[in-house]
Image 1 (cartoon, rainbow, N blue to C red):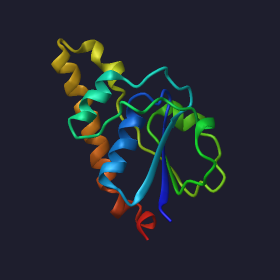
Image 2: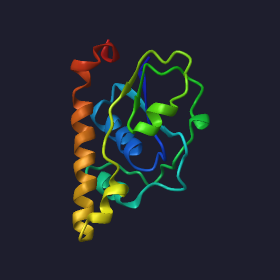
Image 3: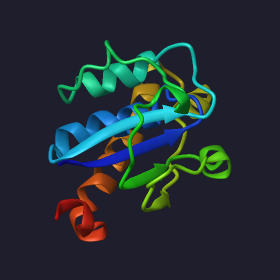
Length: 145
């Protein structure tokens, strides 16, 4: 049976969606999920765009609340923002909760001078999440047993 990982963020519209999609690409031996403590209405369009650059299609994804998750135990829960860390509910069977915060691209792009500069912010956060996920075999070996 595959180990299950959950990525939590506030809106489940950007970082947690990117993390879920990247986990499916980079760690196919795991079953990845994402949710938000206060789900947004839709997936961030720039997040969709930068993920499509890597072949990850987020067009069928939608922000989900924690109550919309399948009734299942998670082997690892990763909170990706301070709000999610503070409001992380207790999950039965949630073996381990880890916080790894990443910048929130929508909050940063107000300073961007162009659309391309904004996309650069999204790509940077996407790539930082990918680097974090690539560390999983070393940092979370129990997920690969």
